[in-house]
Length: 177
Ligand SMILES: CC(C)(COP(=O)(O)OP(=O)(O)OC[C@H]1O[C@@H](n2cnc3c(N)ncnc32)[C@H](O)[C@@H]1OP(=O)(O)O)[C@@H](O)C(=O)NCCC(=O)NCCS
Image (cartoon, rainbow, N blue to C red; front, side, top):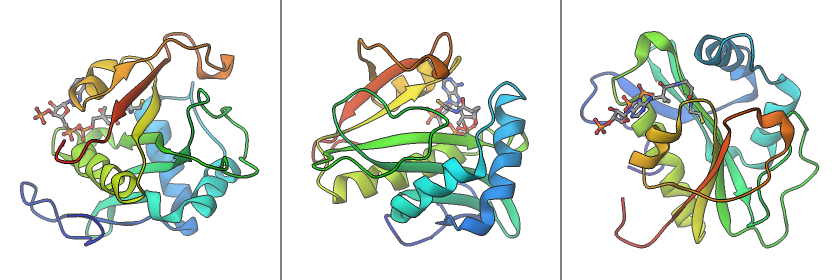
């Protein structure tokens, strides 16, 4: 399915397309609906990630309705990027795909939107030759990521990630979903 923009077979009308800078207002609205007022990023920080790794940032939509998004970018084995900071550059020798944020509008949950978005960035990361993927699971998302093959790593995360945030990683072996 990588790179085709086709709808996942199980959800009629659901399609994925590359994120664009013009999508940032709707991304921020979905982020607020998904996490509440306690976690909101800036368009500048997200826009910088999109500029650094446009091939790793995707929007899920049905017609004109935005349903969810994912931001990812190359990273390395050094913990997690600082939160709420526009990245100056990607690490030299990055060998992992870092899933910065994946969120689905509450009205579109349970339709396979997150699974489709994750599949797209997993395919991107594998095609880039990364050895694995990592992310910081926020709040109660650890069980969701565990189902997708991630395991917790011991680490000291930047305080901005908040209580309960958990650094997780999974390998990207050939043939593994
Ligand atoms: C977590 C979230 C992304 C799931 O989105 P979704 O589109 O409803 O998920 P999907 O329909 O693609 O479900 C994919 C699979 O994950 C499972 N799943 C969904 N939400 C889950 C959760 N909170 N905990 C455990 N499993 C979950 C589904 O049952 C499904 O399993 P299956 O493939 O065996 O049927 C969505 O609830 C969300 O945006 N939450 C708020 C933001 C968030 O926490 N994002 C993660 C950031 S760290």
